Length: 324
Picture 1 (cartoon, rainbow, N blue to C red):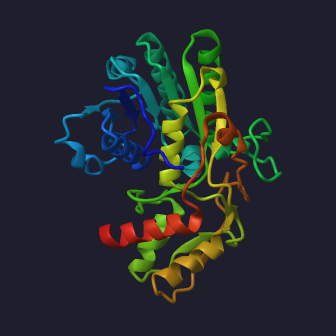
Picture 2 (picture 1 turned 180 degrees about the vertical axis):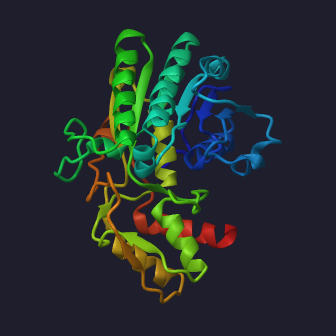
């Protein structure tokens, strides 16, 4: 279980795009702790310099401030790199509905730039972030790769396009691509601030400040919340996956199902707060229920998530208490 005993060739170099973001900075940290080299590419539009300041004195770490929408930047960033972990994208379903042109340029063209630059520079493995949002309105649970519904947001569309481009790059250009469909990732360094903040850090911060959080809808929506350590494991194991499974996509989750209202009351209990939530309207483009079948990733590259929701939440709460 886990990833800390994984072995890569000596002097392996990883490029983490979006490396100053929540998931990206955790990937940088894990790889540096394993003794390998990391180049971080981020334009700091949603990532934060503070997330990567701790690596600045590490001789194995290099930072490039740059934008994946610029192809020359992508070429420079992929030079001499063995593995690309492409996390650079803008998230948030509601924001994508407000900014469709930007999401197309950033999430689709930017990812395509990264694939082409990786191909030109002989990158061994290209692992990229996709999303459970590609399942759209497909009602059946658990969600299984290959059974998708109608897409419900521009964000979901961008991720679906990335998957199709990745398939083409594996088929025609010999680039080993692996798409990771993340399900509601949470954990240390996830931003609790702003209108588009993820629900767990937002709730924790508001409760710590004795504020009443708003739950969108009735709170009966369910999610397969996935602790950050499981996502790190998936990215690194995908870098060691067989070329025979390149071009495919994989659900990355724990395989559980938590209801939002239950999570809320778990947090109030853990934080010793007696605060009732507000209830607001449903969020546009949101799916009602989400739960992943993770057997494909388990069978094809040994993904074996170590943290269930309860143990992950405990770690996350401890981190926020110390850092907020």
